[in-house]
Image (cartoon, rainbow, N blue to C red; front, side, top):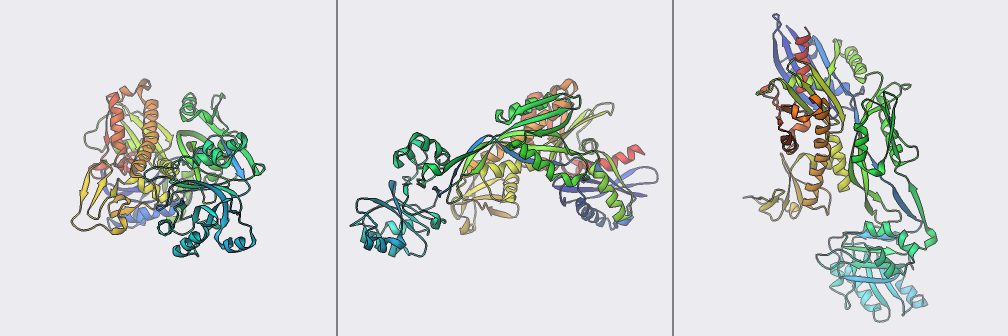
Length: 612
């Protein structure tokens, strides 16, 4: 009896299938395992993850790795995702310029314009006459001052001086307002009050309940309040744009001579074909045009971007990041890209509290190829480490197709979609057993990137969790509203810390999303659109390429495999889309027990028997 291990190294996970070959040549499946891929797919760091997965699989049958006769690993190509911004005019302001804020407890309402004045200097300036009774002032207060003292000081000086607005570092706007003789707009929770220059003309606005600011999010509103000329109005447009949707804001006028523009062009993408033809497309035209040009190229030799541009820098980062996959003197080439339109937060130069503005962007996943397959190096490293023969056995999509045939209810001809972390693979086995396959850039990891980018999340892990699990909003201590509108009630009270929060319905319990001020509806919309942009787009282009006569209607059925086929909504999206072409589509159930996972690893073991 021989023990054969099939090992599928993916961008996110490494899967193993153990099978035994009996003396009569029959195959019996014994165990399987799944562990996290260590390092970037296709690099020597994968070896540790492979060994971990092998130990788990052989341990289930009371064997050791040394008992294996052969290890077969998949032939695969690493995929990386990145974003390339469209042309952005960045306004650089050499002095502090604005605070765009969204505190939970602003107080007062309306607009005010005045000179900034630090509360520390109020007494001295009053004695020396530096404060003028005919000027309006916006008082800046750090957290050293308690709310009662702030209110007492303002009430004292308001009889002689015009204090028209207040900027607080502490979370005490309502407490201060309740103690003021004269109500004024107050913005609190401003961390960077120490960076606010004194004696500068500033405009402050607090929206009325249920509304957002109107004047400071409008370039002409800023021009009205701060007396800006047309050139100055144009310069503050990025600031106004970044303040859209805020409940309160402060903009501080900076001398126009301190405003400079720095433009980094979006740039052009250059595509070289194996036939010697060259294609180019400007990234400003958007993802649809980019993918239209990509589809015109039969065989891509390499893709690169225009130097000293956003897209040029992006492709340079991708190739540099994948340099570890190949030898130092080897040329790294990009063999496929998936481009999708998205929005990305761009830091506003001159912002005091780290404000950003959402700008159009193109997200790109790129597939990197090298002359020497990275899996060959991994195979050599495993041979030396384990003293077992290791073989690079076959194309990933073909192996997945063979494994998918163990799903009940399938027959030839059969197409598969392998939805992984980095790539979407498709293969079609016809009635004669001939296989056509294709490997496309972009899958689960790109969805995570788009979610993180469009929601402006600080954590990639949070974006990944949002991708995986449904959402709800806790509306009382005993019930929550699910994202589909249904209500769920509890007999025991929910953790009070989750009250009013958007949470993930994690298998281990409710998990709060650590980002504030993002509504349930927005998160759901961004998540679903990201999945459609990547998975539905890639599924159609991959299946169309392998379909007879490139007609999707010539594919009778499709089996979904891979980690992303476990997603709670992606398979339904694909089933809905492919039903338009009369295609039967559904999750695979590999070997009647694995669900959509383990298709490639299973196929690696099965193909060994076939080759024998």
